[in-house]
Image (cartoon, rainbow, N blue to C red; front, side, top):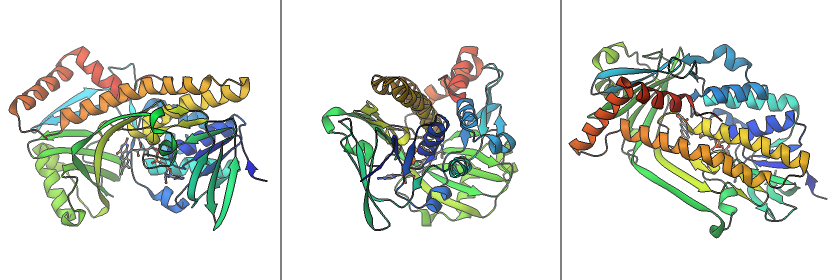
Length: 391
Ligand SMILES: Cc1cc2nc3c(=O)[nH]c(=O)nc-3n(C[C@H](O)[C@H](O)[C@H](O)COP(=O)(O)OP(=O)(O)OC[C@H]3O[C@@H](n4cnc5c(N)ncnc54)[C@H](O)[C@@H]3O)c2cc1C
C-alpha cells in the first residue's frame, strides 16, 4: 500500500522548508520530496536581505534564534546616480521598520536544522517526480527513491519547486495564465570574505551600467554589476570584476572598497514572471514556482515567504474546518501582494539600470530619484515598498 500523509511538499528550498516547519507546529503531517541532494540545497548562494515580515515568520516558525543574533539591520537604502549618493531612511519613514541582512544559505540551514530536529521526513535526490490526480480528492505523487519507484498519497500538494519545477508545468495550459518579461541584461555577482564597503546597501546607476553593493555579514560582501546575460563567466577574472565595480561607484565609495579572492562568481538572467491562479484543485503553488522577480530590491525570497504565510493559514483552515474554499482564497490573497511586489521590483530595476541610450529616459530617472529623496511622499513610497508591504 502507498505511503500516506496530509500534505506533500515538492521542493526543499526556503518555501518548502518553511511551510514544512509551520505545518509541523500546527500538527499537520507533511513529507518533502526534493530533486537535489541535501548538500546541493544547503550550499546554494542566493538572496540576502529579509523584510521584517520574513524575520517575524521565521521567528514564529522557531527558526529565528541565529537570525536574531547574527542578522544585521539596515536603516537606509542608498542610491547613487552618476557618482552622487543619496540615502532614503527606512525606519524613520515607516514607523521603525527596517530590513535585515542574513543570507538565504543561512536561512535554509536554520530551517533544515529545525525540520531535522522535529523528525518530519524529507526525501532528497528524488528522481522523476510526477504529481497526479490533483484535480480530484485523492492526489498522489510518484518518484524514484534509491532506484525504486515510490508513491505517496495525500490530501494536498504544495508546489514549492521553483521556476523550473514540475508542479506548475503539470497544470493544464487552459487553466493557468502566465505574464512576464525577460530583461536585456543580467547580473554578474561576486561573493568575497571582505568587509562590506558600506553598512547599508548601495544601488548605483552609472553610465557604464548598474552596480550593487550588498553584504551577508560584517566580514562577507556580495557585489553585483550589470552585464550581458550571454557573457562568459570565464572572461571575468576577479581583478576585472573589482576594476569594473570601482568605476561604477562614487569615488569616495570606490576608495573604501576592500577586495579579495572570490568565493563564488556567477551570471544570473533577470526576469519578471507571474502565473495565475496559484491554485488548481488540490495543488497550491508558492514561491518561485508561481512568480519570479528581478533581484533589484531583494524581493524574491521575501515574496516566497509571504506566500507561505497565507498558504499555511489556508492549509490549517482546510484541515480544521473541511474548508475547501480556503484553497482558491489562498491564491487571491497571495496574488494581491505578488502583483504589488512585482511592480516595485520592475520599477526599481528600470530606475537603477542603463539599457536604453535615450537621454530623455535618463532625465526621467533623475527626476524620479529627486522625487523619492526630496518629497516626503516619494520617500514613503520607496521606504514602505523596500521594507515590505504589510501582509
Ligand atoms: C541565481 C539566483 C540568484 C538569486 N538572487 C537573489 C537575490 O539576490 N535576492 C533575492 O531576493 N532573491 C534572489 N533570488 C531569488 C530567491 O533565491 C528565490 O526567490 C527563492 O529561492 C525562492 O525560494 P523557493 O523555495 O520558492 O524556490 P527555490 O529556492 O528555487 O527552491 C525550489 C526547490 O525545488 C526543487 N525542485 C525543483 N524541481 C523539482 C522537482 N521536479 N521535484 C522535486 N524538487 C524540485 C529545487 O531543487 C529547489 O530545492 C535568486 C534566485 C536565483 C535562481
